[in-house]
Length: 176
Image (cartoon, rainbow, N blue to C red; front, top):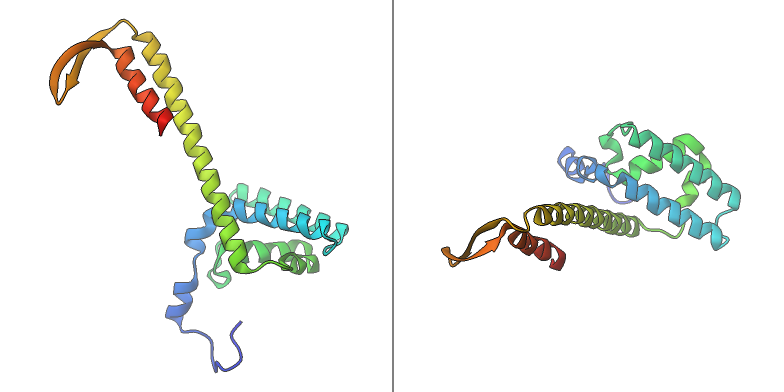
């Protein structure tokens, strides 16, 4: 990467700044998913042979299984999750790994991985909220007739049921 007019590589401080694997290792699932989709697109467009696409897919499957089992070994020299996956894929399948980045910039890959990660995080939050709403509904039904004081401006107001009060939170979660 460093060549041309530079007489030497970056300083240790700059190398440390560029290493992001400690932060972006959480993107490994999305990086692999994006690479799978990109390989399929390259094959569908006739840019990548079906054989290479299948080889890449099998290699990505192996990396996914390895990382899911806790096998991601951080290497600061590889800087980020994209380089980790790329290097591991090359170690597993060899030359076809180099063709995976045809028609894809690193910035495209980063943007795609981050977008996929955000989408997955939102899905997890929505699932958690659905569970929360289910629990609130169950408790509201259980306490449908249990009376409690209602409050207005921190002052005791008309009586309400605990079930009704819990349903207010259920609806807030649904609305938001």
